[in-house]
Image (cartoon, rainbow, N blue to C red; front, side):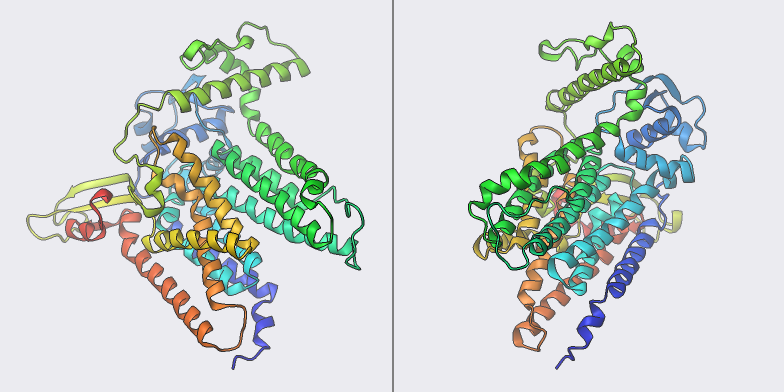
Length: 527
């Protein structure tokens, strides 16, 4: 029999934080090793790394000359940038984070990738803490962090200067804040009604610190990619439902309607209004140079598309003070219109070798090759391929099949348990997965990629861990159910680790023979 005295020791906050930080440190080491390889702009790094450097040194994203990549990779940033702004089609928060790494380590592959490695590792820490809040167990929290750390899509995006790892981090952190708010709100209501009796509408709780933090983080998420708007809307409704449930538990009549007024209005202010302010503030560099955009980008093909007109601020003289702020904000609004037009009207006919439909993302239907070096001959770079064959190096954006396929099944189970067993915790991964995955179906006629599903991955992991925790059960006493659950959970973690080891070479640009590479291409659609 397991001694009961061990439980408090394991659940001790110092132990919980120490274990989570240790796992985070190991995750960072795995992501930072040979971070500068390959020494090139991989995939869309060619946009974001240069935009980040321009933001850092000029305050806004400037255009660049032809051959800029070669000049930068040779170690020089001189005579690369043009004076006019570039038409960038994503917000700036993620690029500012990339710029911090470039400021610290220079304009080279390590410098523009280090921010992703740091943020990807911190994402594991947040996962540990969120799973701990949902399960009450340090071990389940560590398993959630471990599964996230063992995923290939997470690994590769933590080693590239793309925006998606920042988006996924902010979304996971925002959801953590909302779950923490739910727990805080329940405690606050209990404190204000100690006898368990609630009169009328119940206590008014106008300020909710965790909800405010969630609004700030959602603003940063939207300031990285607009797709964060969908999770904000879905989780905003979920917060309302949680608040209504808390009031129902205290005996409030008509809790849904009353909570809409008593909790919904403050929640809207905490999440939407605060998020909007943070989002606009993230464009400060753009606003400070609005006149450059008004001069060069106010009358483009995006502005005039389908009967559109040039920005009205184009012909207005520069103002001063608050009038200038207003003018810049109007220009920014029209810039957003043009960016939206680009995304919705100018990408529909685009094609790409690695494009895929969102219906197959969770099953890893089509990975993305972001860097490949082929035809390395025997004897070159240590290639030990047999005569007549070659070696290669590749960085492939492909998830860990054990994590993704198991997570897909776990999401189905989570939906059943949320609806059937009415366990609120399973609503978190269901809402997260639905809001980060389903919206892409309306854009499946344009070029989109598997790695956009990195925002869905944390919720698949949460569904997996919550399902395993339910299988084991809350009882600490030895039992057949607990033994079976422990065997299943342990076996799953071992399989995920083995798969991580197996696919590591094609995630990290290591040298492999052509035969070894083919062994890892389980399906033709992966090639």
